[in-house]
Image (tube, rainbow, N blue to C red):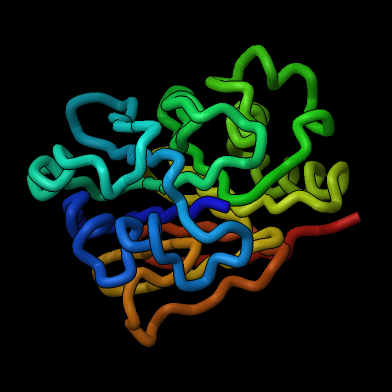
Amino acid sequence: MCRHLAWTGEPRTLAELLLEPEHGLLRQSWAPRRQSHGTVNADGWGVGWYTPARPEPARWRAARPLWAEASLTSVAPHVSSGCVLAAVRSATAGMPGEESACAPFARGRHLLSHNGVVDRSTLPAGAWPLAESVCDSAVLAAHLLAAPDELGERVAAAGAADPGARLNVLLTDGERVLATAWGDTLSVLRTPEGVALASEPFDDDPRWCDVPDRTLVTATPDGVALTPLETT
């Protein structure tokens, strides 16, 4: 059910992050290694990044498989950023297959991606009018983006309201990345150049570490902090 990644650190091209790694998002779109829900991620893709030109991030999303996006191959090597968030989508059954249902979702400076599933009926009604799509991830994103600094608390509350939910979330404002591991895999890679967070490692670097379930991650280019999420 989706794969995603975030990078914060020295500028990297979109090609370096999405296309060139042996097991990057391009390969994960058709052959993920650690995905336990679904087999392919062919229902869309998206990437968001930050530049000095303006505070709000740029986004490129599509409702087709990442491997079918021929233009990305030529553009990606020319776009670089110190903060990138990207995802490939495996749509929840019954959810719409449209570009607006693809992560990353945005509000102001913030970008958010959700890897998992949640019962939309358990989310606050106030999130629906703000959602980019009626899909579960978009409604969840609208709820979480309404209070980005409360990510951990809101994810824990959503998990309590829907015990079957999987709530792996990546959230960034261009300066730091917040993430939650809740019901699915999440890994972190710390390097001298920066930090990567991903549903699964995009290469075989031995420095990748798995994030414990029910954990909030705060990542900056200088390091990573892990905070257990309280459950009820």
